[in-house]
Length: 104
Image 1 (cartoon, rainbow, N blue to C red):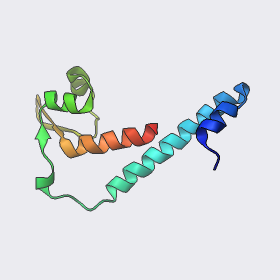
Image 2 (cartoon, helix red, strand yellow):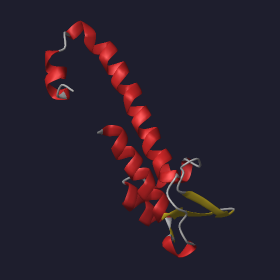
Image 3 (cartoon, helix red, strand yellow):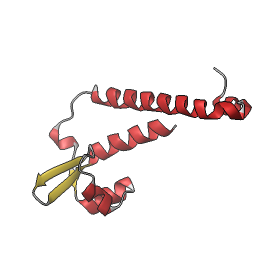
């Protein structure tokens, strides 16, 4: 396989939009594979994870406290009760791995 950097620099400008679309699709496919591989991992024991409060989750993710409150569908978010939200450390780690895998 040709080195991607070499390929990108030699690609004619008029073909860049199509190449970007193909790379985005490939990125999503790779991210899905990472998530599926992580899902296939052996189940963890309850002691392997811990729930943290929003300020620690914000620090671990680099996201703002406000963002974490507003985005209820985050995969590492746990609604404990009305007004009580915690965040799974293991879930944050999986989320970060998937995001990193999607970019590189």
